[in-house]
Amino acid sequence: MGKPLVAAIDMGYGHLRAAAALAEVLGTEVLQMDRPPLGDDRDREFWESIRDLYEPLTRFSQLPGLGGPMRALLDTITAIPRPWPARDLSGPSQGTRWMLKAARDGVGRALAQHLRGTGAPLLTTFYAAAILAEIHGADRLHCLVTDSDVNRVWAPPDSRKTRIRYFTPTERTRRRLEAYGVPRERIRTTGYPLPDALVGRGDALGRNFAARMRRLQPHRGDPPLIVFAVGGAGAQVPLARKLVKGMQKQLRDGSLRLALVAGLRPEVGKALRDAVYAAGVDVEVLEDTDFFAYLHRFNELLARADALWSKPSEMTFFAALGLPFISAPPVGVHEQWNLRWAADRGAALPQHDPASAGEWLLEWLEDGVLAGAAEAGLKLPSKGVYEIAEELKEG
Image (tube, rainbow, N blue to C red; front, side, top):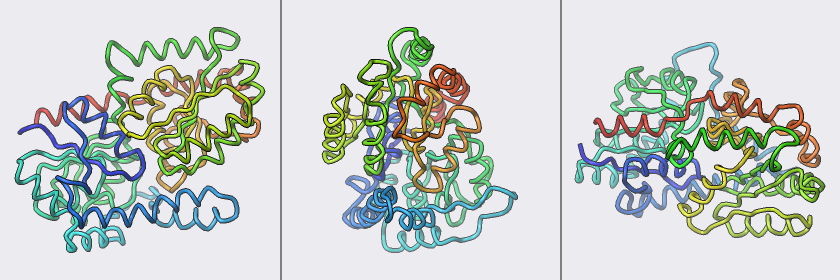
C-alpha cells in the first residue's frame, strides 16, 4: 500500500504531538495540511484565518474580567452535546455545513489531489484533513481523534457512508462517533499515541515509573520534579507566575523541584524566565524555536518528571505513563471531558490554589495522593502508537 502520509496542522500542539509520535514509528515525516505539498494558498489563507480567531480567544479566556465572556464564547464554539441519554446525533450541524462550504471553496482539494497522485494512504490527527479529502474523492483515509469527547465536526457530513477509518483514545470517543453516525466497524479504540521514547525502547515506561515511585515516597530519594507545561497558545502564563510564587519556599529549601515548559513562543519563554528571576529560585525553563526540537526535549523532561501540571488538553493522556496529571482549568468543552475521563479513573487531580501550591503538593506527597494517581495512570492504555502503526502497515 506504500508508506502512509502523516498529516497534521498547527492548531496548538496536540495534533502535531500525536502526528510526530506516529510518524516516528512509521518511519516517515509529519506534513501539514495547509502547506505544500498538501495545501495551496487557498488552504493556507483559510486555516490562518481560523488560527487568528482561535489562538487569541484561548489566551483572552484565561484573563480576569474579560475572560468570562471569552470562555463563554469558546465553550459555544467547542460545544459538545451531553452524552446522556444516548441518541442519534448524525444530523447536519453548523460544523458540517462549515466543512461543506470550505470544500466547495476548494479547501482540501490539493490534499486529495496529492493523495491520488502518490497513491499513499492518509493518517491524520486533524479531522478536517480526512473529511475534506473524502469530500474531494480521496480514499484510504485514517483519522486519529485527539480528545475523549468531540464536536460533531469530527465526523463527515454524510457520516453513515464514510470510508474514513477512525482511531480513538477512549471508549467515550468511540461512542460519540457512533452517535454522530460513523459505523462501528470504522472505529477502533487504541488509546492516545504516546511517544516511543517514553513507552518503548527497552521498557522506558517501566523504568521511568519505578524511578518515579521512589521519588514519590515521602522523605526518600530526590525531591519530586513537577513539570508545568503552558499550552501552545500561551494562555497559562498568568497561572505559571502564580505557582512559581506559590512554590517559592519549597523550591528554596529543596523539598520540591520545578520545570516550566514554554514551548515555541519567545514571549512566553521570557515571561516564565522573568517570573523565575523575580522569585529568586532555581527552575528549569524549556523553550525552543523549532517544534520537533522542542518535542524531543520535552519528552526527555517527561522521562524524569514526577507530576505533569497542565490544562487538560492531549496532555491528559500522558497520565498513562504512570505520571500524575495535575489539571489546570480546562480551556474549551473538550478539555472538560478530558479532565473528567482521567479524574474518573483516578489519574488526574484538579489543581488547588496555585498561590499555595508548594504546601498542598507536599501534602499530596505525604498522603500518597501523587503516588496513587501514578499507579492509576499506569492502568490507562499506553501502547496506542504501536497498534495504529501496525494497522497502517498491514493496510
